[in-house]
Length: 166
Image 1 (cartoon, helix red, strand yellow):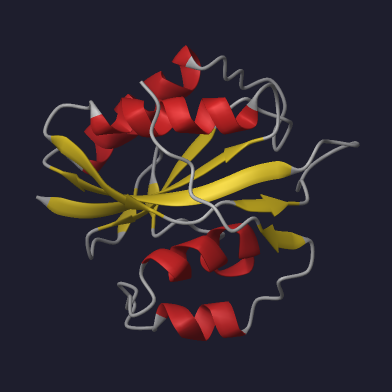
Image 2: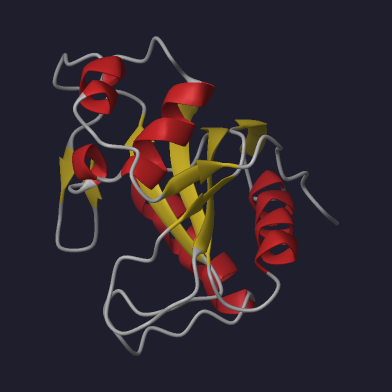
């Protein structure tokens, strides 16, 4: 089994319910178990136009799926939650990104791991660090070093964890 860290975000619809449902769906994936999730954060949207704030968290999965299989399953969960890919960085009902897949470094047309913009996204680094404070990235860099250089501007810790819904 491989530890995989998944970023979850939503800024359309009932974000709290969508994230709860997505956590439950990830826990039901073949050869996969939801191990833990971070506290919830509210963040400013990154993208075009005026958008609602996002709710964000990070989940830790144990999975026997390959990274490509996991990506396909996550994209299916997004689609089942109304995700439309019409505008780059546009608003979305659900966004699921593989941040880390074990200690692997992956670069294919469909997937890059570690996530290529992870180091500059406070809405990823802060919840990931809450979940795995002592994590060392595949490049050998401690996660806390990246978090220490990333501003928390526009990020609000909500102090709760979204529970997986059924």
